[in-house]
Image (cartoon, rainbow, N blue to C red; front, side, top):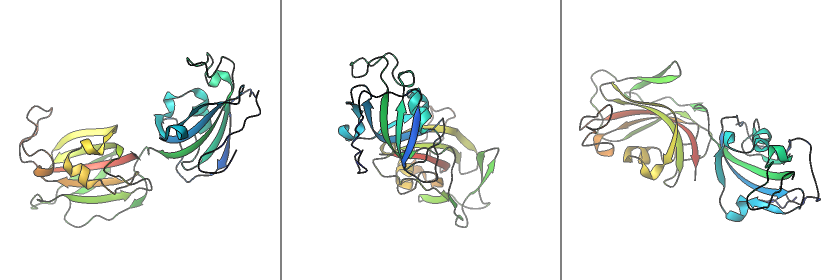
Amino acid sequence: MSDGETPEVTVPAPWGIAWTQSKVLKPGGEQLLTESSVVTINYVGVNGTTGEIFDSSYERGEPATFPLQGVVPGFQKGLEGQAVGSRMLIGMPSEDGYPDGTPDGSIQAGDSIVFVVDILSANFDDATGETVAPAAGLPTVTMTDGKPEIAVPTGTAAPTTLTVQPLIKGPGAPVTAESTIQVRYRAWTYDGTLWQDAWQPQEGPVADLISGWSEGLIGQTAGSRVLLVVPPDKAYPDGLPQATPSLAPGQTLIYVIDLLNVTG
């Protein structure tokens, strides 16, 4: 196997393995994968019986993103606990891979398989990184029972321009206009009334977001916690009368967002 950007894997076929084993070929950083991680990887898969490549994200020219809980058992066993940035060698027997083979016949029942995997990124379970002192005069954020609460300074008028304040600077990839992001967030109207409680992971393209988000999150990094104060013209100037709960026209909104993952 070469140590270049695209691995070249040679398996002395026919080859087999009795249980799933993994080896770190190149160590990564401090962020470790968990059983609930959503990972972005590049990989090459080789059939141990034939020595032939049966799948390669490198050949497709695009990394793959998926939850570890949604892959074959050997993949999850081999990657859980490993560090983002690592290159891994994973060998797995048929029962941890494709015990019945694959529909295209590239893997038969009983075939052991080998993967070389480059772990490019993964979601964070929580905001993590360097704490940033917020500017004076902004809504203050405190964490209560694992969720953010805000307090609006008394006597302050709602700002008329977008305000972006990182609260925790994460170590992950930066957001671009082409990114897909995974977030959790809470939103309040500027009088301090909670409007949306979406403090569970969800994802979507930056291009589909309100302009207050698509502008305010550009350049922010995965792992960050960000405070956005969004004027009506960059959110919902006409309100959302049909939403539950509804939103009146002309509302300035306060968002606290945990940016859990950035891909693309």
